Image 1 (cartoon, rainbow over the protein chains, first blue to last red):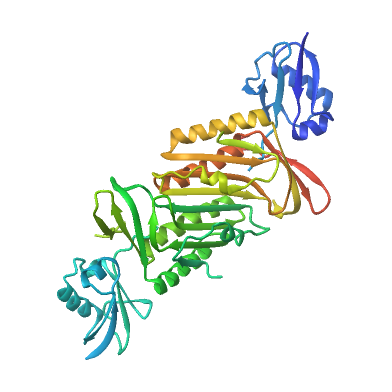
Image 2: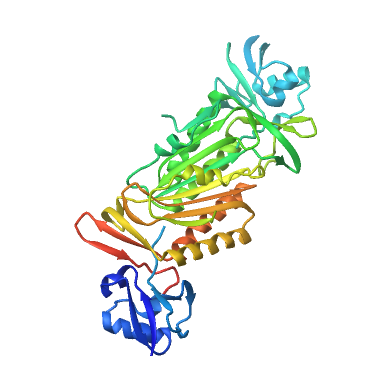
Length: 79
Length: 79
Length: 143
Length: 143
């Protein structure tokens, strides 16, 4: 198992109840979001999110390395 | 003859050498410009000008009344 | 407060902008024209703007009134300098507030375009080579 | 000076604008987003913006870099607020200088559109009726 830090923003943070957590996980980012969505009951499907690793946009089939910082990006509403 | 005050701006003023003059004239604004163009050697043909009476745009076939203030408006270049 | 003014001295933008603030306006677009160091490929030292002030202010006010008819805007204003200007000086300012940015941008662009096309203001440019000239450009569509 | 910044407190526009001045630039276009008293037909009391700051500043800088490739501009910058904002507060500012107004307007519009579509910033609105919500809008073209 790989330990990754996950950052939550906006409605994801409200649902998770924390703004970050460290989780043990194997597999790609899509699988990671699926597991965390089940755990926290996130309303947003993966199709409506983007994802980043270590502050740069990533692909859903990327596999985060040990100690990576993963952020799930809900639809944005700046401006 | 009717006495009108004529205002000159920009290249018309440079050519006339004055920014206003009072002239005696009969007829419409087109004829007035033709007479003044001949007197001062204005380069701009009437087709490239607009004309105003007493601070409001006028038509070339308007006839200015006694004491009217006539302005010939060269192509503008504000902004 | 008139919404179109001719200014014969430098003016501050901040108070003009502040007058356009509205609780229902989420968007503000502004345009400024600055004196450039060149025009049509010639190096320029500065310029002088001259206006037929009474008609310029009346025609400018008409332009802003027309903008209210054409676009869903909350407020709009325009101020144009006259007199001697140096490179970098502010020549004209337009500000528009609106509920949404589409209308703010469109009206701002329209007001500066109409101002340049219709308001009796003339630019006298001084060139680095020593000469100077009044600009009497042809409008789009003019023969 | 980075050309895209996230600000966690109110900021002054004047020094940001001053940095965009160029002797070769005759045009300056700016956009400001202000907090409105309503959104989608609901009365709003204020809002909170939250950002993923590291990624927001990187993505915002990319947007401004792309604007330089797409438009003939002299300079451009954007600042977006985060934190608690009240009705009337400045939420975002974009400024663009260019030789000509076509490019200044087009780039300014493009930067605010891309910022709204791409930069990881989220709006939490508080409504007059007492509830509040994160806005997670669908982008144009999103299913």
